[in-house]
Length: 177
Image (cartoon, rainbow, N blue to C red):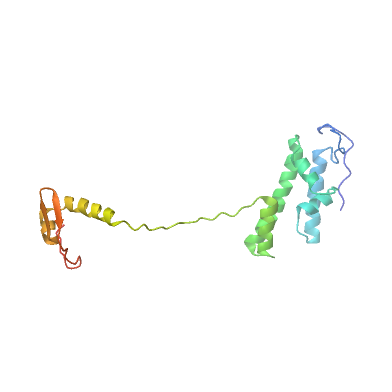
């Protein structure tokens, strides 16, 4: 089914800046032509694509779709965005339903519809403390210990100097808390 012939009216169209005149001069005609493309795809059991849409609308390539999408007239822009969203929906549904080539469909969604994959990278890096850091931590903890806890550990604390003798095996030490 071919699109309706564009209206000869030139209302709501950007001025011609030296290029070809606009193929569609009425957003309603463009919208009807887009609808006829999706009807054609459904009847023919063909997947809707941007390239197929461009050709059905009588354009030579997808650039014309971009031109209408970027038009200052929001009615044209809305027509193209809605059509692209319908195509994107078709592809997304194929991925969800597992129809066809899932990698190929995902590639198309990324390449032509701006989809992106995000990944989370977790870094686990254990830092081994130095002897000086361990000594400082041990002194800090021992300074907070009660005299009974220090006695069980065999630690002598006199005049703010902590003398750590051979500490007993932690599995055998009993500390009241």
